Length: 114
Length: 110
Image 1 (cartoon, rainbow over the protein chains, first blue to last red):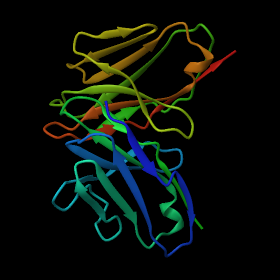
Image 2 (image 1 turned 45 degrees about the vertical axis):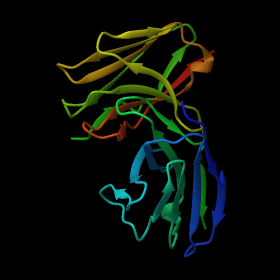
Image 3 (image 1 turned 90 degrees about the vertical axis):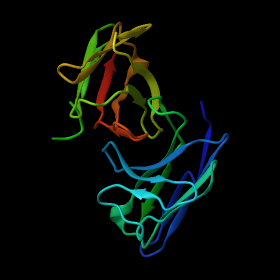
Image 4 (image 1 turned 135 degrees about the vertical axis):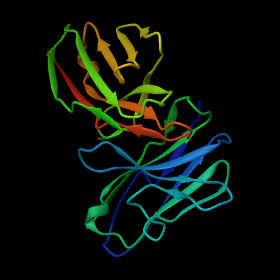
């Protein structure tokens, strides 16, 4: 298993600003992912954070809006840029250690944009 | 068609009842299937993996039907503490990516 620390746990931000969310894993992991969970909805994959190269984004998500860094095998950041109230959501970091095994999640970041 | 589909519920059942949820998936090449539990305002946590032959963990039984492309979760003798959202998760073949269903809300009533 993997223990994931995600911060901040919550934040209230002004529209037009940006917030960077950090995800730290207690061991080296192959894959790191970022998900969004909008109110009353399930999890939607934003992107795969690739170590040493640009993140791979899912349809509907772009790098300018959600830049991602992954400087090493234990750490990643997601930035939510130029925020609007529609970005209010829970953002979750997830890791996969081996293909076809379960994913592990951070505690999530509850973002409210006002 | 959505990659993973679930009935959102809610399912309101009395304590002690047996309840079952189904989840369908669209990609026949998917290899890995899971049920996660998510409590209100918490992150999802693995409840159980779903194996081809079906598997049981206490009051919980998971089954996979590849021919019809669905997985199921059966909860016997429901407890109040089982109240949560149950998420069906399927891997996207050939990747490490996991696709989540919308979740099924369960409320166990006293």
